[in-house]
Amino acid sequence: MKTTAFNSIHKKLGAKMVEFAGYEMPIEYSGIKDEHMTVRESVGVFDVSHMGEFWVKGPKALDLVAKITSNDPRILTLGQAQYSCFPNGKGGIVDDLLVYYYEPEKYMLVVNAANIEKDWNWVVQQNEEIGAELENASDEISQLAIQGPKATGVLQKLTDVNLSEIKFYTFVTDKFAGVDEVIISATGYTGAGGFELYFRNNVAEQIWNAIFEAGAEAGIKPVGLAARDTLRLEMGYCLYGNDIDDTTSPLEAGLGWITKFNNGREFIDREFLTMQKNEGVTRRLRGFVLNGRGIPRHGYELVNSDGETIGEVTSGTMSPVLNKGIGMGYVAKEYSAFGTGIFVKIRNKVIPAEIVKFPFI
Image (cartoon, rainbow, N blue to C red; front, side, top):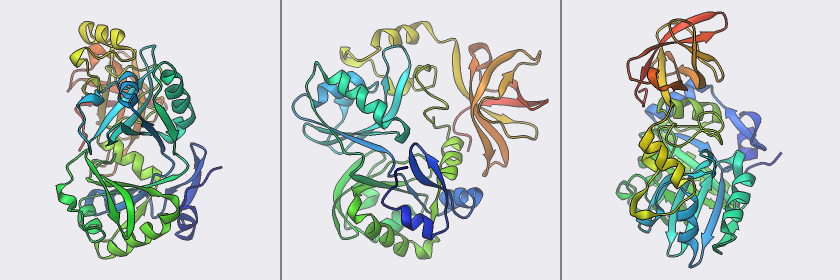
């Protein structure tokens, strides 16, 4: 199993460690609900160093990124980041990712930990005819996500950069906690606000200690992968492998907003996705809230009032904020209108639920 630069810290803090995407990672520290509410109400820190980072460089860099991603990187200005996905050439998704316009002719692609090798092979394959310069820096870069309403105040103590001026989905590279060339990015996957920091592995401990010292009076806590999952689910954010994969199109998944057809850009699956946009899809990814007791889990059946299968749960949990069972799943188009009543099969029971808009909270 691989480890991140923070592995010994997690163990000293008594984290429950599990194997995730080939890494030994903390799944929880003080408990999922406590960690979840810390992020919603105060500030929490996630080790997300298992994520992958690819550099795309040189005069052909933009040509490659524009070909392989669904969003349009040509509209980015320096210092902007963009949520996007890699269409797979068959109407599905290789992965979802962030695209950073780092410098002229230099982009950073941040991909999911479980897909690093698959994504790297895909990017290399697509680059054969284009010839951009590629570097897989996944093993050299550490990443922390500092999330929650108090995150900006805590981090501001550690840098001269005015963090409140860094707009959502923009970033700067500057000095942080005495360390040069830290990427300070106003991104995150919790919906609670905050930043993601990228830096070299050899300064990881220094940065962790500085953040926890600065955040002590705000009640800062480390947060594991379990609460990361419940936080993203309350916002209706997709998790690769559950809600999106090689068999789901971005349009079915409600990711039409990151699928851009403007200015005649040729990108992978453009024709298929244009057809789906024009003709519509037969199923949609939707959120639902349970109106009875129970917790929906991945793979549970979604049925109509006659007990006929209309879809299945892709992600589900007990929402710590709502104190209700919430979930996401693909449902047949005729059941996708907001307010539609559906049912979730939980063991031998059929629990009523309602289709709702994202986010849940």
